Image: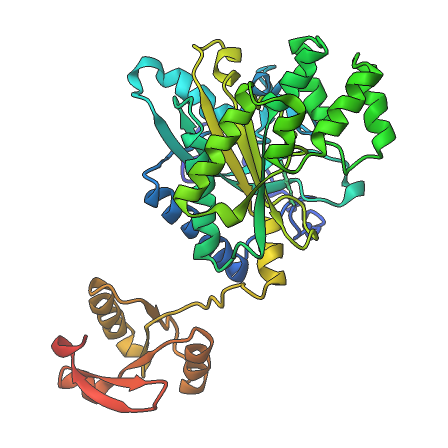
Length: 446
Ligand SMILES: CC(=O)Nc1cnc2ccccc2c1
């Protein structure tokens, strides 16, 4: 054995064991329930999507960050009855620590901001593209993982931050061919709800719970919503008033009902005026029913929706000014969004906008007889050192096989290493699209 068995001594040599041939069960070749593999074609689409996420983040001057997919469960223990909490993919590790596969990226980002503390100069503009997890009963047959693009601005209290974030998503949509007639953004503010609740002197700490219940409007019968609201202590009158405010679709109507004195209206007016200046007015609309399903939002909230109403929300985000302080940090304003990799692909399919992405190899290099395999490797390296992609044929294959492979990998050129050419320092170059073939000196190959 490599590490040298113990030799010597008078010990008898053990009789050879009849090798125990385990019953070699074929493993399950499918990935775990609710998860996906990314074979080449799917991986090309995912890379295309992520390259667009990253290019937009670059255009907006954001820096990329990343965090472990495994986090302390404590990051996600919020008592507002969120679905994301019910479906937490959590467990106790061998060190008896309560850990979780992250269901979202924002808490990790907040943790890193706190970790960096005073060494960070604000505003911080960070983005991340990461896999997020949930554990839900497979009865619903939904996925247990997806990738999210997150963009966050830490340290800016004004709604210019939210306007900037929405602009970045509009920029992304435009890059991939989605227009304002395909999707829009419903925009509101949780401060509206806060004003209504405080008008009914409903205590602050009910606020998050009420938001989570209200986020289920459209997913649960209205009666269930009313029951849940009453169960947490909202009076019948307050429930009616809340539902009435939530049905408002115009800022002017809203002002008539709750007056223009509050912060919520002022911020929303400023946001819509900024939308004008950014040039994405036709993408955004006020809709008081948007509250989003995460407990930590405190102000403006928004979500991207498909105007045909066929799909779930494409993306969503908002202001979370208290999250860092709930983690024990200073009061630092923050806002951000999450953009999942699933609904957007369904939308692109519906709109016929999925890109045609094929493997592209410039050269396929093959030796015309086995003792030229080394020469072929030399040619491959010359081309690769020039930055050209090469599929080097690694075994002695008939030309018929090589042509078939060349077609499959979309090779532009076939480089043939033959003995008489090699003797005179040349190779055969066949342009596969036209069939044109020339003999080229090795040092003139480009
Ligand atoms: C449409 C879809 O796959 N949604 C999805 C899939 N996996 C998740 C995992 C964690 C949190 C949210 C998730 C959401």
